[in-house]
Image (cartoon, rainbow, N blue to C red):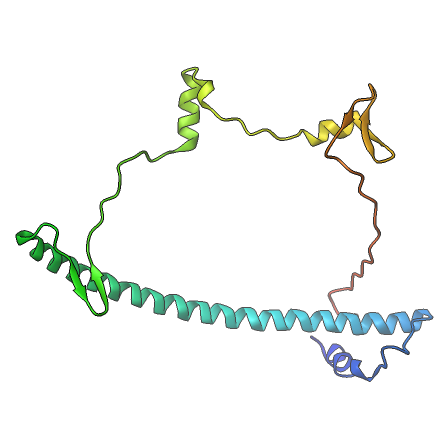
Length: 182
């Protein structure tokens, strides 16, 4: 942000907003200068925030990794102790006031690679085992249908349900220059 933009930003609160009005090129130029200064300030604020967020995220990642390493160490020690207990009792568990340690078996099953499975089914002609997702071809529909009032119809008079007209809107666009003119 250059000195002029800083000055404009600091002095932008002097304007009484309800009474201020743009009524000529000079006042429009002044307003655009203020607007550009605010945009420049937004950029600076976002950059500072991003730097702080990145630093905090790195700190958090380091702390979480250190915790994960420590937890893995303790999990290994508990697993070793549970294995010793299970020599005498195959259903042994470790119960403490702070938690329990046990094992759980997961069911056997299938690990799917969807693309490979679909390709294999297609190659073998087993397309009846492939689910097809149905979606409207919107580009093709807009070529064949048009609105008559609030109804979407084609040239044969068929009405398409589920489509409604969207009114065109107009919005204000302000683009300020990025560099200072001085």
